[in-house]
Figure 1: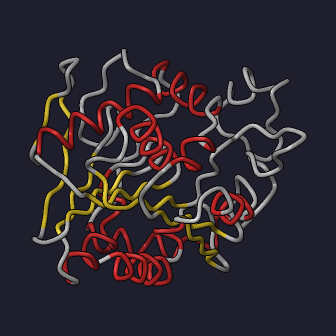
Figure 2: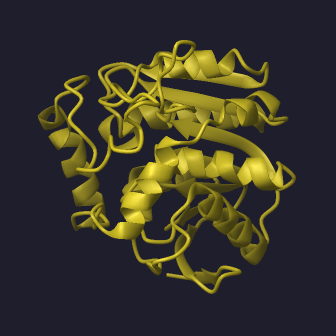
Length: 269
């Protein structure tokens, strides 16, 4: 795998395949870049160049004890785009990967961005009187301790066993089980806590590039309404809800997700 080195000397690995319009894929919490394999194949077959980034602490990238914040992960995206010389890139992020993109945009703007796709990630995880689309059960009162024992079972959404066939398709494509990072290390716990504290709604409202909010109807983490309420913030936004789909939408419903992704990409070509 090719690598880049960030401005704080951390080595990040990435996959790079195909030619054409660049699409950067960023996976969620603990997930490696290889979890995008079913999208990578589809995108390359449709004439795109695909770069799937392993964030620090994820996949084959270095896992330092420092930099476990969304701000730093957003800066890593800036370092990555600069190092590989990408302009007008489409950025696609799943779960925390989407928040990483919003962090990048909030710090560095959209000069290098063509469009953005957020995959089942609410822009604000904390619920409040004016926002009911956060992580189920998470409030400002319990935010600092909510994830102390990891990501809790919310009792909502699609049963995990229903996602097994889709996971098997990914395993067959990879010829291996994707290697997930441990969520129990101090840096990963710190990253999850920092992620939970963020609110990207103002960033989304101010973005000047097309964006697509993909929601899973049966997400285990938050209501699908986060997608169309985020679109209400900005006329450049669009939303789609994937039915009978859990949080990891690109793995749970790859065919449906790929169709929505390609339709959006075609519309901005």
